[in-house]
Length: 467
Image (tube, rainbow, N blue to C red; front, side, top):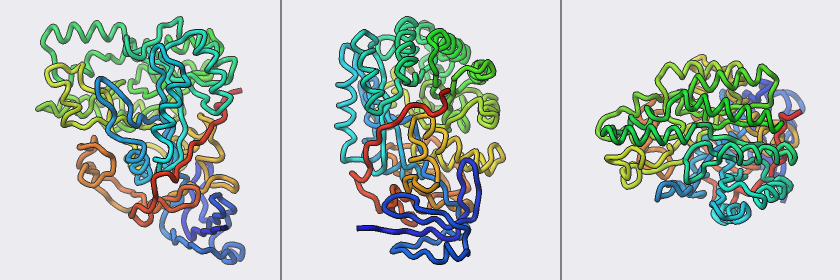
């Protein structure tokens, strides 16, 4: 049965345009836009009419870095695909790209199948997968080609976590060479894990066990060094590179230099690095454990450089690295030894609102907000223009956003399956009001009207920024 929706009277904001327009949705897709009040727009009829007067009409967010149900450090992330995608929808995100994990000694396919099983039938919004490559060998390299052909077009490697996900330079180079041939994109966790492990051991031997030492041993210089090394390896391989969760100004400088040289190098940061700092890691009574993630939070002066990088396009994407662990029973595993605190923070529900606060505070423009949160991640990971924009033919993933509503972030009211908020008590201007996923209302005037299983797996083409 054909269903039609008209959204009337809002300010439509995409990465390239702002216009007062009505939006016609048919059968889950954007059918047309027309200037509000014109004969064409007035002539549209629909079963569902949404009044967006005084509101923004924006594309649903694309969060290209989440970890639902991810096993880590003897526990696993607290959000399931069901709870995590529901929380994402509450925050105006309509597509996630999560990470399937290859176990050392296992095949890529086994890891991918396991993640499909976790997600299928459980998601409130659409989803795709990247593949974490933990074990580079001849079989793995062949499998990379097959995965690209079927829409898993990005592969994450780790220069950190020796003994778990770590790849050495030779393994990284081989994977990059393969990506250069098959069109895949290598995503890099850039921290010198071998050196960090030495500093961890030395800190613990000195009795430095509190959460704040997590930030002190994972030094900004070791993020910068690994970023530089990853760039050079990618250059040798002739491959593109996407550096995840950039937190340090020194790493931004490495990315800027590479981009100035014309290299296909891209950078992502996360809201926690834009709004939080080592001050949070140093909170007393083990509260700092709530803020343990890797790369770690940095001193406050890094924030301005990250915002600058987003303005100058030295950083292109803001994702969440959503990987929540409850304070009680999970983060507490590291009492007396910061190295045992599960690394990760909740954030999938907060990203769009925090970045809108960046608009309110004058850090970025409205269109840049949509660019870094919707359009660029969709292009980067082969989902555009199906996702990330409001244009005829695009999926009707649409958010009605109230730019003047005020809210206070709190674990009491959030929908993530975790017992604390990293932004507890923070006052924000702007709030999601209604969310459509492929034309279906998931959030309707601040009520959840979606369902597990509406979200479908979305294969991706290759990165759309490559020459």
